Image (tube, one colour):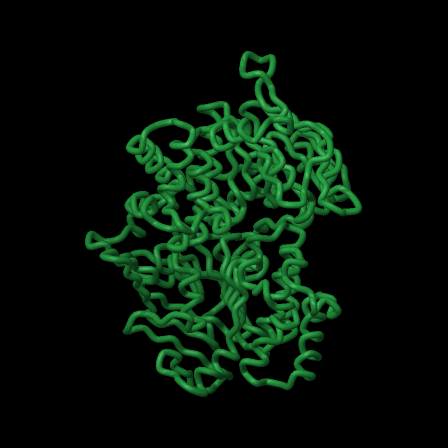
Amino acid sequence: MLKVEGLTIRFRNAPRPVVDGVGFSVGAGQSVALVGESGSGKTLTCRSILGILPRGASVTGGSILFGQGGKGGDEAVDLLRLSQAGLREIRGSRISMIFQEPMSALSPLHTIGDQTMEVLRLHGACNRAGARERCLAMFERVGFPDPVRAFRSYPFQLSGGLRQRAMIAMAMVARPQLLIADEPTTALDVTLQAQVLALIKELQGETGMAVLLVTHDLGVVANMADAVVVMRAGRVMESGCCADVLGRPLHGYTRKLMAAAPSIPEMTCGQDPGAVRDAILEFHGVAKTYERGNVRIRALDGVDLSVGRGETLAIVGESGSGKTTLARLAMLAERPDPGGRLLFRPAAGEPPLDLLSAAGPELTAYRRRAQMVFQDPYASLSPRMSVGEIIAEPLAIHGVCGRGEGRERVRALMAQVGLDPAWANRYPHAFSGGQRQRIGIARALALDPQLLICDEPTSALDVSVQAQVLDLLESIKQRLGLSLMFISHDLAVVARLADRVAVMRAGRVMEEAPPAILFSAPLHPYTRALIAASPEPDVNRPIDVATVALGAGKPDLWPEPFRPAADGAPPPLVEAAPGHFVRRAA
């Protein structure tokens, strides 16, 4: 279906190619994974197939043959020698691409439905009514909880995970012969990731679609790929059958990637963890409702949680479960519905501060003590400010120190997070994703906070950089005695970092326990689904699709103790064992 030979790509005035002699092939119905760390040339290779290289980049050698050739299908064509009109005929209909960053790839001026229908309308597949019907059917297949509402929504009205589902639906609605998937599951929780991967496999079986998969998740590679191409610095380091490359890697770089890949370790129930004795932050009956027109959305529904002083509380769950809303409430970026309480204790033994009634100096002091590391290191840093200005901004806002002392503080913070202080005058675009996340962490540490809220801080990073950022967070926590509220959908990361884990679904906590207990003896069917859906970098340990389907499906399919009551009220959260809470009938 696709044969790439000797592909070479250069940027204008660059001393060497960014893609240098890359070659591989993808057969009909086959899945080939391109893996490697950021900057290895994976995305440029894929974009060259569709003729959408960024400005300043050009193909200087090689060929890209697309088609069945002599196997009874269309005659193979060299995509590099096609006219723009010829490429437009192929793009979207015969070759589709799922882009990595949906917020940048989707038009902010058009609804999700119109953008998805455009694919079918441009290529004359059907009329408007037929296109709408096919789009809604695809929205349902990729896991939209309300396809009609998603069809009418604009990108900014959807969460990151829902925007990614829209990108996947847009790429697959025309049933292409070749699907190029550039990090298609980065922003998705593990249960939806399992469903999307199963959907791609299902469409492959129905249509013989070939898949070129770009990912840093070796667990996804083990579950999806027939063959693997490992790239580094624009060159192919190793390629071959998936079982051989992952099971018996020969190149040192491949072995390094395998060593950095996180996985959930085998755990046994440990000692009784007891209750949280010294909570720095407490949520009591916290709820949050959003109104969009005549629609009321219950994002949080009576959440009770505590973050212990010096501990890491991990919050996991699918997109739309309320994780980020909880973080925004903790930062007081939004206010909860009346009736809940949000308490903060600056020091052990002190009376708690009621954050919802705090004002003036009390509120300002809390905003210094609680800081946030955002999910997207590209969108959360101002492109118009230098790194030094970005890190120093909180110091200036709170009047912590003068300009000279501030410069010294910035240099110390950059060194603390592993960045060269000499880079303080550079701008964010000059840094990689992992370096930008380090800048975000340095900014969050500028005011010496007590509580650090991390919202998916490693989801956009490749495995080697992710391991470095996690090492950094662990060392900072131990050195400074920070409390962490860590939001993630990667259970392997949670198993490594967390002291306690809260599992959320539909705005409620379903289960809460230390990771050793939660991962070795999960009780709630949804928790079991999350664990079963977590991909391992081992071809002999595939995702348990049946368990995922049960736990991630409708609550009325769950076993009796976990089902909502007839009036829709969920079972209460009860203590099933010391330190282990689960939402089920007592």
